[in-house]
Length: 451
Image 1: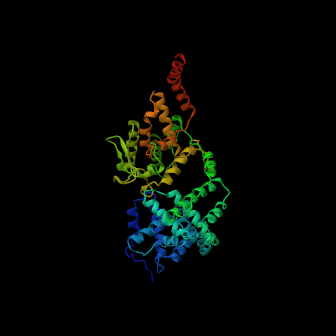
Image 2: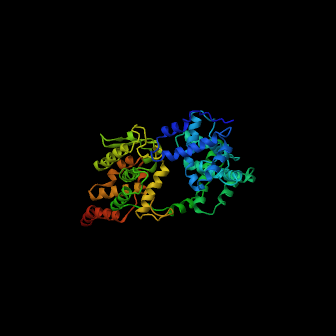
Image 3: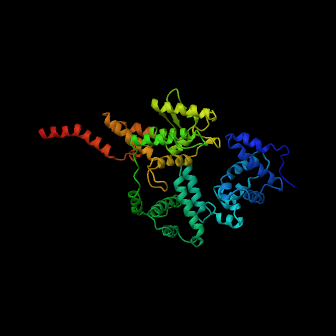
């Protein structure tokens, strides 16, 4: 007997109407979901067995790679079925929790494989904080976050160490120092050595908080210094480089998503002119753009800061053009909706997608190779904004030291020291600084010599 209770066959159309997909995509999505519904009616429950049967039936018509590119719509449909209480649980979400997998696509790929049991078993990941030190590390992360720290990077270090301990149960009875020493030998890279030093510092401080009688320990700072010396210098885009990026973004090929070139163009404008981080771009709401006061509001970002950024007339003109195009494309006009709107899924772009899209523009503009991590990063647009702003101050006869505290606030930094990290000494900047010293400082030296 089937557990699928939809006698009027309205659940698929209700889901498609609620999701507000592009009109051109709706027929394809309806066909996929109807085929899913037909298989579900033949099974007593929407579970792993039913999903496997649907995948086998679809593989007769589609290649696996093409099929896996479309299963995301079925995953969202399953969440909708849970929401309307047609099924109790999303079976894909259940499998993700059972095998501790973050994404759904590996689960679908395993279910579509010839041997799903082996494929699923290969996906299994250790449970977070499941080692002998798991509870201690989890409590430490919770404590630091309760004190106001984001503690994201440090939590990743602790989770990697936790997985290492789970895969080496023989370390359960040894001291913390021995565990850390074994972890340091797991990889020969300098980055790993530096990470081990930082991790050791975190754990010994956390242990000292619980047991003040534990003697303090000095750490070797050489691994961190070696990594810092090898850190990639930011690429500073000149105004001509930025114009090239804007031209490439404006002409970005996107026949199925006509709004995307305008989205990319406006993202690059704000990344450079306002110095926004990728997460800040993704987090902008439509209501954050004030066309009356020519400002944008960046809310609750790094260091939990919210700041209001005034923009030039040219930037606001581009924002007006984009917002008009966004409205014509059918985007929601709710002030809380994402400023950068995705036409396919009627939702905002994620920070990862923002980074990927702008990186593709850099590749097309010739600043990065077709593949790989070499070349400029998206964050380098923020660095370029700082350097070019200081360069313009020099050229206008303004002392940058008098303006750095304002620039620090504009960038959303905690203090001026964080802003100084962004000042990369380019040849143009060095030339302007030298010219300023020649016109101001040399005269003082001459006066001292005459006296």
